[in-house]
Image (tube, rainbow, N blue to C red; front, side, top):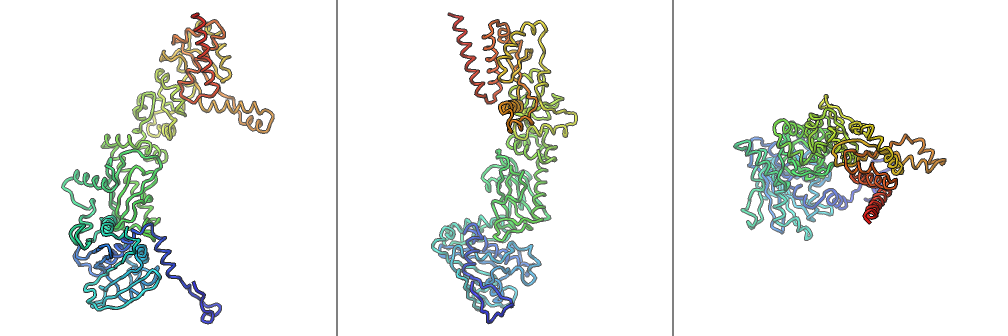
Length: 618
């Protein structure tokens, strides 16, 4: 930036910025765009906009009569169109003024919806691969208009000259680039051809390519020979479905579980959503392939769908979505928000249709994506109502749906942790209790919402009292005979805040059940800390939080032969050891992490029983 002449600009007068054009060109061309490859997309987009304006001038022109021609032979890259072209005044106004767009001039701004781009800086992307841009144009607005040549350089300078009409016999524009030596990766003929197909495969205007040798096909071979697959006519619905699935597999590299056709006429959006055939981590979002008026805008457009729709990948083409300045993502506005909501409804409608008419498809979908659907159902009441009865859960009846489980069990009990479910599953099942494992993410919350779908169902958290109430007491005589043993057992297990009781329950091969919960263990730990810190500030705080610490329960099964033999032991030390061994075995069967004291007890009781057996045999 240079300082203005103060004599020419007295105090208080308006001044203008003195811009370093070379620095500005470098900034925009190297930091606005993500990759040098976008230079071809920008040139093709400018050509498409020029063709759109030409059709506005000549609406009766036959479709396909005006097109785009690409040429690359390794020494030059050329993009030619039959569009509206530029006059000499247009060249000075629009090509030489960064930030102004010809689309805003001469009432064209009223037709913005007809153009892909909204910013007149796309030409700057060419400086990513070339030091000079050569433009030869002839306007279709003025009969017998001369040709105009513009040469722009990366240092910010340019030249303009008028040429005879014979220099370009037909209206339109040709942009020619001479690539720099370091830009060969993006300007080789094969790469230009691949990029043209990548960006322009769905363009509505004919696009052809020529490498000067025919090595990539016949000169003038079409880049986009067919319209978008959803715009074609098929003999049967099945043929259409197969063609859309094949296109999704070609684009994304996986065979879709199903394809969902998307059509929003209000914004001119059409496309497909491909259901992923395998599970994805909850919350992981995939980018979607978004075209605007046929031109590829982005392959990573996450914003086109809501966050919960991470089980699909979409490819869409839209008329009314607004690109950002770099034309590599979508501008967040009311239109995009409305499109996102409408596409979400299409996905919900597909789920509802599968649930109503295609149970096999729904089963395959839920088998792959039940965790994703559960995460959605927690926050989406409509999905909850629609799919909760179909979602699989781990229960005392095996893996089954809540709908089937609720038909068998009027009261559905749900555990708060996986370890609690594993402790009680076998015994609860034998007792006829219906218990669901609520320890997995989302499951407990969803099970508690079952009455919203099935009002006749009752859901409650499982607690030790509920379970022990379904265990049969022993007769009075048996309980009196076991009283001495139970007293020794309680004394031996007091260190674990564990009570001991004698009951009868199935299965008979289960000698003992340890009824405990994570919350109860935490409360006992807090109480122990309060006792150890008695009198200090920390002890007062813990004491204020202390509740009546619930005790664990070791319930011995009188139907088990081992337990019947244990309660008959009359040697106090052996009785204590057997109680410790039963506790250790029940703790291991609960599959929860063992505390150090419990691991020590298991080892000690095993060795003591082994020593007793050896002494008895000697």
